[in-house]
Length: 140
Image (cartoon, rainbow, N blue to C red; front, side, top):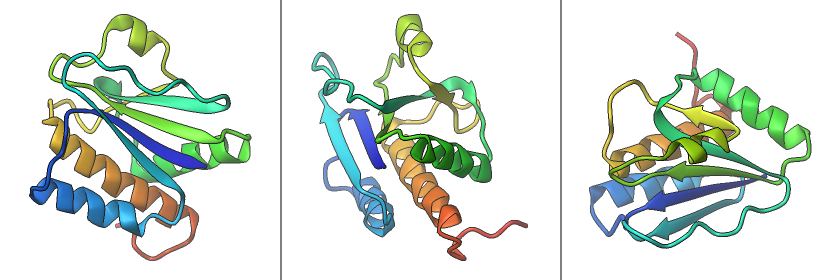
């Protein structure tokens, strides 16, 4: 299954970009990142068999194990792409939220998109590590 991050804004070459890249390189699954301008620009067409996850402060706060299990169910159910969308400063509209398969929150705080991208990259690495029985994730 392809893990596809579609994010508003360019990450550039700062420390956030290095952190994101560090985690994305460690993921054994195929990964793609599409950056959109802050305003305008459209996400690539929705691939057949894709699942859409919006990062949204109103979304579910999933434990890492549950995120891993959902990825596993989608993958094993024949979904070919999990598309994670990170919005711009104004977030997502109601129509976009309604069309998503999952609204995912990293707490109730609003995060800058660069930090949200780093947290998502880490959680995707953690989820795929859980599914591979890798010791990176340990329950407390």
